[in-house]
Structures are given as structure tokens and as C-alpha cells.
Amino acid sequence: MISTGLSFPTRGRRRPGGGHRERACEIATTVIVPPRATAVLSETAETAPTQRDRHLQCIADKGRIGWQKASSYSTRSRVEATIGRYKQVIGDGLRFHNDESRTTEVGVAVYVLNRMLELGRPISVRIA
Image (cartoon, rainbow, N blue to C red; front, side, top):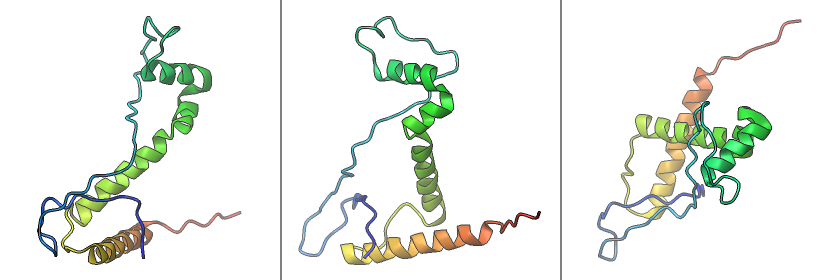
């Protein structure tokens, strides 16, 4: 069985056993917007720093690349790109109605996407 850690909303489709069932994503997330290069700290940064102020202080201490690593910004960006690619190639809706079939559907779709990426990736060999 494949576990993605995500639960997708069923959009009110009829379920066996009657009634509608909705599921929400149960992942706690924080929104991280990269500040502009010209951004400055707010007036309350010393006493009550906001999330933005903390990010700006981290950028000042570690540099932009260090901030991206510390905040997992690049990981989030890659995940968003992967989900976008999945929706563009496979579609944004699931076709099956029960959870076991949906798990299989997602597993097959992920296998197909990974295979497509593998076939499109060049094989590089270092010479000398």
C-alpha cells in the first residue's frame, strides 16, 4: 500500500453506504513568501518580531541561500512544482470512489510520472 500523507477532498461524491463525506488536508503548514531584496525590518522587530521580521533577520545572519535551507523554502517549492506537474499531466481529480481504488490510482499515476521524468533525464558521464 502506498501512503502519501495527504488526504484529498472527495468533492461531495456519493460514497458506498450513503451520504456525502468530505475530508480536509490535515497538514499544518506555514506560508513563506520570500521577502524582496530591499525589504527592511518593521518598527516592532526588536520587541515583537513578526514572521517576516524573523525571516529578514535570518537572511541578514545566514544570507538568502542559508535562509532558504533553514526555512525549507526550496523543499516547499519543489513539492509545489511536483503537485503542479501531477495535476497538469494526470489531472486534478480522482476517478475512483473507494479509498483502496484511489490509493491504487494515485500509486499508478506517481509511477507513470516518475517513469516519464526518468526517461526525460539525460544520463551524464564524467570524462577524465
